[in-house]
View 1 (cartoon, rainbow, N blue to C red):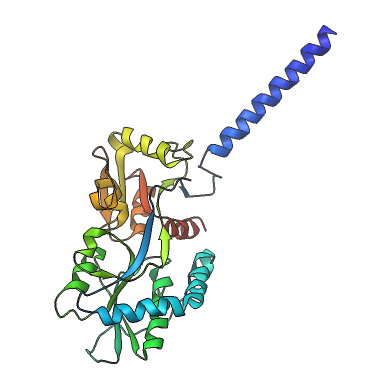
View 2: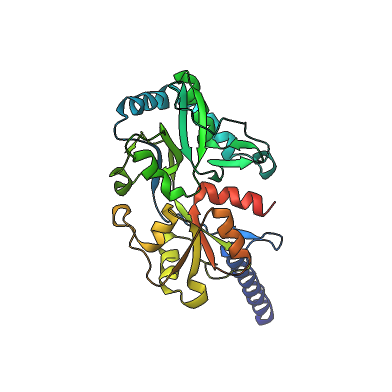
Length: 295
């Protein structure tokens, strides 16, 4: 009888050990070895996107807000098209649009930064993205020709749209609504909810067992040296999350060393090259990067 009990106990111990190993593997975010990058499964903020206007352009703002309601079904379909697309499908989207304003009243001139897939990006000579297809919808409804102007520095779009006698009717570049930006421009009603997340190189174990925002933030606060080097697109909310922004309730992290890049993809490339430890970016963009880098 004692032998039988010992055997049962031994079996239970093995089963418990196997179960613990499976649980640990499930918590680990490194995934399979074929992946190049991974996303930490924790949402670090609560934000909303909106379009921006010159403060003197209240009439257009009202028109766009009306269209956001009247064309809600079409806008939702555009978002679903991009957010549900495969990496290969994302490379097939887009059209050619005029990129040179002529100051004609018949133009709908959009300021953007075409380095933030799936919201705005380039496919060769084509321009694609959620915001760009919404812009085309707006232009059609307003009876105007869409003109898309790429501004190299994302951080320059807000002052460009807000400047006196600005040539831009609207800024459409996945802008997080924030009080500091509202000092320069007006926002439309919101059209997308988002959050900040972290991307790591496959094999990075720093955030392996983090399952909540609090756990991730605790890890971030304790990083030092090379582990504290991170990056993202210059001027984005990801940068503000790291350096701090009172208007967004971001305390920031004095221990982190943030590097700014012209696009999130360039930040990921530098991470893969070993120059930074992780990238912080909007979740929908992170998912798009996962598709392209892990394809």
